[in-house]
Structure formats: structure tokens, C-alpha cells
Amino acid sequence: MHEERHAVQAPDLTRELVEQLGAVPGLDTTDGRDLLIDTLADRLPGAANIPRHNRPRSGILEIVRFCRREAGGLHELAAALTLYDPGSRPAHRVRELIAAVPAPPVLAALPDSETLAAAALLGRVRHLDARGLLYASAGELALPLRPVTTLGEAFDFLTGANARPDGLPPTVVLVEHVAAALDGSGPDDAPTAAGLRAWSDVQAGKLGLRTPLEAVRDELARTRAAQPAPACVVVQLCRSGADPERYRLSHWQQMRPGPWHPVPGRDRLVTLAEVADAVERLVLRAEQSWAGEPGRPVLEFILPLHLLNEPMEWLPVAFLPSSSTALCLTYPVVLRSLERMRAKESHRRWRNRWQQALDSPDTACHWDTAGSRDHDPGHWTSALAADEQLVSVVLSAPPLSGDPRGSRASLFDALFAGVPMAVWDRRPEPPSDFRKKARRLLKGKAIELPQRVHRLRMDAATAAAGRRGGHTGRHLAVLFDDPNRLVDWSGSPESDPGRVRGGHDEEGET
Image (cartoon, rainbow, N blue to C red; front, top):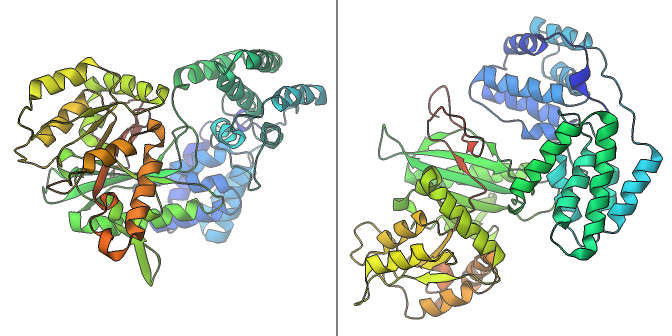
């Protein structure tokens, strides 16, 4: 396995490459850098995940850092640059610098006996998601195009992969993920988990990598409660301070299922009327990066409270120039709360209730009483705060500004009590049977709520013409907010390792 971090390279190589690439004609533009990345991705599929920036130097630095991490990445950069710009002096200088880089040493592959020992242990495990565990352990590695159906196939693929920056072979990381997934699954699996960890201990000892191995175990222990994130696009709207009629639209893309590693895109300022076109472009571009393999991506909208009643799931997307369909017919679409994302003082309660939701076979609900004669706001809020097993609320009316029945206040209180799920009918006067339909929707595991809502919306879209407009699925709003998947751009310079920062445009808004 190759490990470029061990190669003897001048400490200022990255700086020199960035300087010279910055002088290559066209790379000072976003389109030029995108073209170079696309050319790189023809040979290194992982290059498609390189973060894009408006600021030229930041964008070029991301390209260089990616290529230095990949075995052979710098030489692929030289080849891509030859196609992009075969003649300029800066491009020629970049190729000279790369040609002078010594070839990285080759670390010994695992002995056959060690490979067979791991394969025997993994062969006992047939009930885990092999593909999901491969995604989780592969990090930024390009994944195989062929289907992976067993842990043995996942292990075989990773035996030929590069070591991580910390030196650990990805095979060891996969074994640790499997062992962690087996914890708590029953006494029959305990010997296998212990055997897998003993195997990792032996490999880490031989390579002098005990510290990185312990770091992986600590991380897995902390994140074990987190569900694998789906491939998704997250869109956030935040009112512009300079122009209250416009919103900063930020977005992130989770390239594949697995650990939460979304890639931020560029921010732009839009009016509400421009949101539909902007979202359509984001979705179509995301589909290009998801084209290499099957999957079930989702869409999430992080919105301020005053926008949560907007029917984002019915925004159109045109996969063909001649026709368009609603987003919710192709993707599960859910809402998330911008105010709570930024209110750290509520995050502990939010995480507690989310864990309750994951552990319970049913979705325990607190029913809104706003608008009823006996509504007691203080009692309703106190009952909610006192019982963390309540993981959802059903509002009796939409949370509109100035709503005299108080459903906006009910939602606000629920959010800051940590409730991760909320359901309501967007119509000013919900139908009399809405409570019955909401109860049916919430029946079952909380984690499966987006899929149940997706089916209900498809039923609404395909209903007979006379029933379509009044179908509950046509008016249903669903907030489904996972505290393990934080994103935000707040303009604050502090570093927060638990949060993925947004695609802030450092050179001005676009």
C-alpha cells in the first residue's frame, strides 16, 4: 500500500504548487477549476468530492491537498493539467515540480495468513450491511463500481487501498467498524467481535500504530448511536441582513451513505421566488455525482420558523426539458429548524430525545391543544418538557405568524424542548380526520418516518383528479431533525468540530 505522507518531499511543495497553479490561465475562475476537477475525476473518481470555492487560492489549495493525499494523485494532476493547458509556463513548472517528487515507498501487504484469519472472522457475520460498513470505513476512498454484498468482498476491495493519513490500513478500520456493529447484538456475536479486535491489535502492533487504532475505537464509541446518513442534499435558507427580501441559500451534499461528511457548496443570495430554480439546479448537479451507483437520496430543508409552512417538497424539478415533477415524487423531503441548529443550549435535550426515538419501536407523540377551549399553554409545555419519551408533536394548526390559536408558539416550545419530529397540515383549517391520519403516520419506528411520508405524498400525487387537491399527503408538513447531522454557516469564525461549516462565499455574495 502506498503512503504519500512518508515520501521525501520539500516542505514547501504544496505552497509552490498552489502558486504555480494560480498562475495557470483560467484557473482563477470557478469554471476553470471545475473543468480541471472534472478532468481529474475521469481518472480519480474521488476528485468529484473536492470542495469547490469561489476564492481561487482556496479552490486550488483543495485540489493540491486532495492530490497529495492520493497515491499517484500528483501524477494524475500533471496528466490532467496537460490536457487542460499543455503549453503555458506555469503549467510546465507544475509538471516539473511533480516529476521531481520521489516515488512513495510501498508498505508490505498483509501476509496471506493474516488475510485468511480476518476473512474467516468476517465470514461468520452475515446479518450486517456490508455496503454500509464499507462506506463507513472507506472515508474518502473511491468506492468499487461493482456491487459489494458481503464483508469478505468489502475486505478484499480494501486490501488494495491506500493507507489513511494516520497510517492505518483501511482493512483494519473496516474490521473495527464490524466489531463495533456487533457490540450489543447478542452473546453469539461477542466472540467474533473480540476476535476481530484482537486481529486489529496484532496489525497495529506490527505497524507501530496503536495510537491511531485507539483513536478509531474512541470515535466509534462516541458515534455508535448515530445512524448512517443517507446520500442527500441539504438546503438552508437564512434571511439576508443587508436585504430582508432576500435569503442566503447555502447547501451541502452528502455524496454517499455512511458517516456524516457533507461537502459544502457556494452560497448565493436569492428571493423566495428564485428558490425553486436554485434548488432544481442543485438537485440536477447532485444527480450527476450520484450517477455511478444506485441509491435512495433524500432532500432536507433547514428553514427559519417563518418559512416552515412553505411547501418545499412540491418544488418542481425537470429531469427532462419537456416535463417536470415535484421533488417529493422522487425523494423523501423533510424540514429542519434553523433556529435550533444554532441554539447550542438546546442540543443536549435534542440529542436525548433523538436517542429515545431510535430506541423505541413507536413514535411517542404530544398532541397540540392550541385552539381548543381548554388549552393551557403552560401545562402543555410543562408536560412536554417533563417527559423526554415524547419525541414528536402534532400541531392542531399550521405555525403561521400571528396565529391566534398558538400553534406557532407550540412548535417553538417543542423545538427548544428538543423534540426532533413535528407534523402538521398546512391548510388554515385542517380536516376533521387529520388527527386520525397523523396517528397512523406516526405508528412505527421514528427513523422510518420520512419513508412513510414519501409514500403518502406519492399517493396524493397519483390520486384521482377529484381527490388529489384535498388529499392529506398534498398538505402535510414534516419536520424530521437529526442532531447528529449538524450544518450551518453563522458567520462566526470559531471552530466547531461537531458542525459542518457552510459554503460561505469569501469574495462576496453570488
